[in-house]
Image 1 (cartoon, one colour):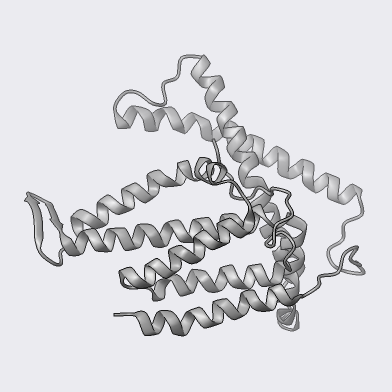
Image 2: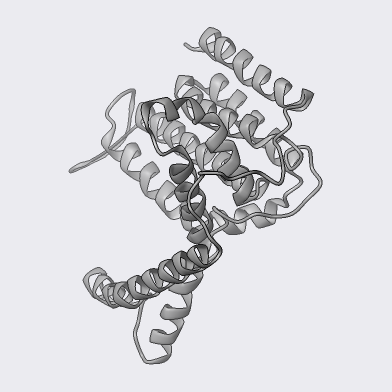
Length: 263
């Protein structure tokens, strides 16, 4: 399975050299900003911004497309459901429970683009930022919550490990599927109920493998003397530069722009 969320691709692009705090803030802000778009102009601005981010990351479009293939099925299903079950505008097709209207098509397109932009932006974050930098950035941004006795370091570490293990678990799932396919199990043929029954046996070995990896990781961290953030020092300090300030400035300016362009 070609899942690229959680993977890091070494590079020398502008995004690779930015402070992880600025990239985290920008992605979190864009996830909310994208909901301000409500017409073709505002969504066009969002799409252009996404394309600019892809160009700045210097990650090949073929690589991104290959990693987004599993997500495209979800986007297509979302598009179809919104297209046929949203009743607004002029009628295009009407048969039984299915009603296709101009407003439904527009709503389906908007929601699909919104979902695709969010996935691409979060993917670019992990592709251009190492898990260690993501952990340090999250921990630094959430530092004020320490006063409320919130386990900031543990939370940041947990999020980083979760992102890191997404591609690992996907690779493990692919290996198990190939092993069961070699034993005669059909995953891509037959009725839907049969396919679901064929997928269920994947869960047991997958959970066993995940728990085994978690146990090995815990033992490795304990063997290396990990005790949380108590008394810990950092090898590399985060440095906020001009590029980071410009990135946040673009995101801040984007908010009133989208508000003005809303219909």
